[in-house]
Length: 153
Image 1: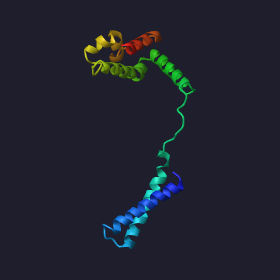
Image 2: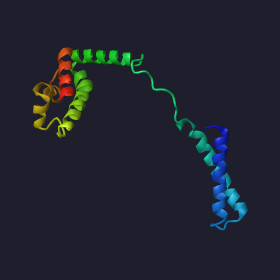
Image 3: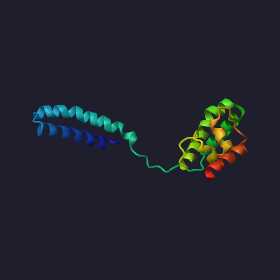
Image 4: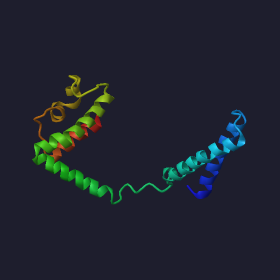
């Protein structure tokens, strides 16, 4: 926020305190001004600190820009690590797959993957993959097929 806006807000706050103090509060003008100075100072500091909160009207970055490529590479790396390390699968991938499955189940009015109807909607393999503590990540092609089934129905 620029200095002119900050000064205007501080002046408005101070004037309001003086007006409220003198007219309905029956405070002497000197004391009303004495109360208005700290109020104006606090308003000025608040207005100055709120500067970063103003909206930035810049264009949205390109969807296919360089930022999406490292994310895809990072995801591929995590999936490869999870395929080799069951602990990583259970702690990183399985909870995310479970959230995707639960979102899909909510569309079918099923609250959790623990509901018996979830097996019929998700299929036995995908249900086992998101619920079983002993599940292992299948090969990449099979994961793609399972996730495609979530998108289709």
